[in-house]
Image 1 (cartoon, one colour):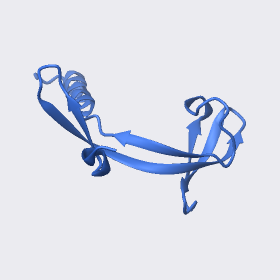
Image 2 (image 1 turned 135 degrees about the vertical axis):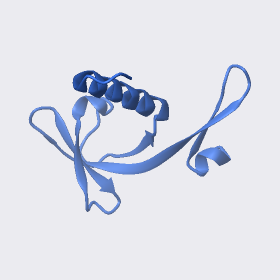
Image 3 (image 1 turned 180 degrees about the vertical axis):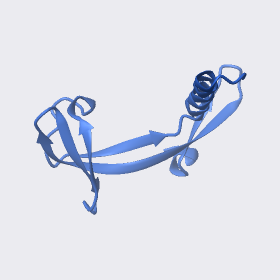
Length: 99
């Protein structure tokens, strides 16, 4: 594991040679059960105190109750900023304001 990964950052080398960093959070989940409608109930591992549902199709084929997975969440700042600009544009349009 790279030192940056151990610190919770991803290091990417851009084509032009600069290094970019992004904040990444890791967590582990355990499949509790599968429910009708294609949902899986996932428990935060190891405490199991909190749960959330996820579409079953996001899990690897053959996944079963009791399996533990490492989940990676990466903040997509560029997409967040793009959505914020789009939302502002739509609100301005709705309210009849000039952007």
